[in-house]
Amino acid sequence: MEQNISIGYSQVFDLVCQLPEKDIQKLLKQLQIKIKRTVKQIEKPTPIQELILQAPTWTDEEYNDYLEARKHINQSRLK
Image 1 (cartoon, one colour):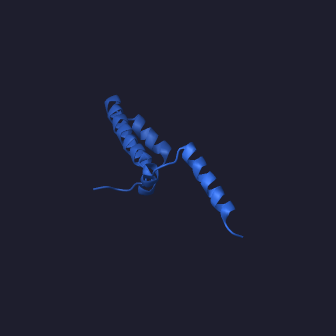
Image 2 (cartoon, helix red, strand yellow; image 1 turned 180 degrees about the vertical axis):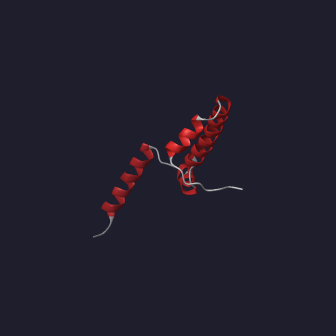
Image 3 (cartoon, one colour; image 1 turned 45 degrees about the vertical axis):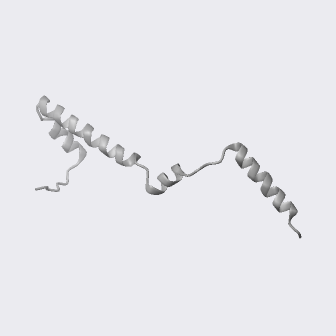
């Protein structure tokens, strides 16, 4: 059963300091595991980011060719 207790950081810190060294080490390991999980969740790209990352891209040469072709098409239109 989980309880929600509203206490401040300094109170938590004081309580942790009262723990035996062995328990502080256990707590530290658990916090490190929790932080790693949180960081992995944050770093995971969203589906739209995945789509963008996997999308095909043009090289500079291909892009310049496209611009030239576009320029030619625009200039050849009847006005």
